[in-house]
Image 1: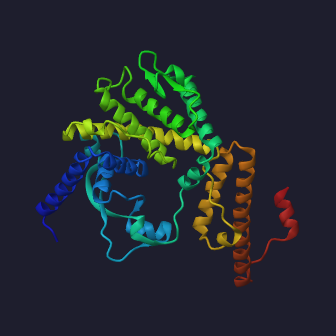
Image 2 (image 1 turned 45 degrees about the vertical axis):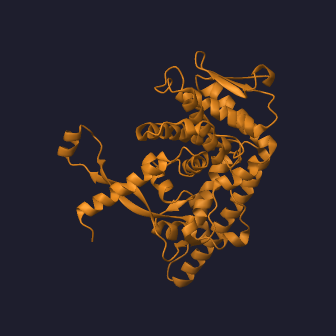
Image 3 (image 1 turned 120 degrees about the horizontal axis):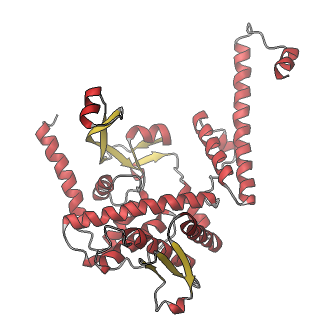
Length: 374
């Protein structure tokens, strides 16, 4: 059992190693790898993204040992080394604690501990599908990329103080678009033939509006710094929806100052805006019906546990409510009906078995049932 001093030294070494990995990101390929990690783990804290990247840059899905077993029916392979991340230590506050901390909250984070998680590549078992698998397939279609672009543009025009407009590419002097801080306006080359590039440009300019607008704390960043941040956010957003933009340059990465505080600040800013863009995009792809549930044949439904079957039913219910495309809504409703049928069959079998095992329990009479329904 390590001493307290040894444990603290190990934690410091872990964090220092993560910081050193971040400081080495002036190489564009390494930077792309880091942004891939951000896209995969956008709900993790900046510290944990750094820790995951420093220990396993190719990690795509992580979970604890028991979570893999209980929630995903996968087992961690023998001999695998865990990826350490920081988990909060939450304490129930006493009245004295609440007074000292000037809070009415019943619980608070009092510290952190490092716990092991494992990447999916370190596990074996049943396949794990995510909505992104289906978003990627759907967004390969020209029309669907255009739909997402239009939905994002409409959202910004209708739900924010930004104005998004389109002009001919010929008027942009070689650019694909720009953000004008003085008018809080995004202008996009409307006749850009590459729809993925058009969507990425909108993400890029939106990042500028959030990071480098007139009211932003980061508006005075050097131009190269600003372009790197905006391109990074766009890259993360496109990776999140599964559209390959690896052929687009991230640019200017080598100009970053090799200063720990500056780089961490820059990455933290990228992560904040990336999180916002990812949440917006996920909402829009759901509204557009692009996040299809995996098609599950009836024989597969029979293999699902009761818990997984209920989860599938709830998820499909939500997707049916959110779907706007009539054809897609009909397909989702058919899947929902299949799951409902399987749940109903199982319930009837359970009731029949219970009835056979408990013959002394009197069944309700037909007339009594009618009375209750009246």
